[in-house]
Length: 81
Image (cartoon, rainbow, N blue to C red; front, side, top):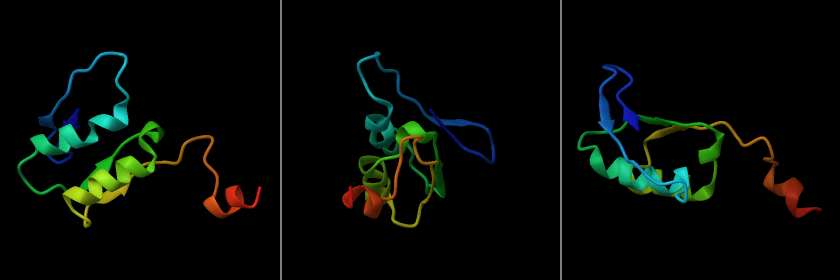
């Protein structure tokens, strides 16, 4: 679900089955919104390159507010292992 933070109005929604992951629905949600999107806020389940890439395809000026997953680590630290 996409909600306008200023008005509280639902701007977009997608109903999926349990076999669909949430990040795959970022594009379909963004596609439903006709006006400019200032920011995207989501939980850590959305933290991943596909989410960031899809948002950037819409507009590189969108602020993305997604906390890292619990298992996240800095890429440089991961490569040195």
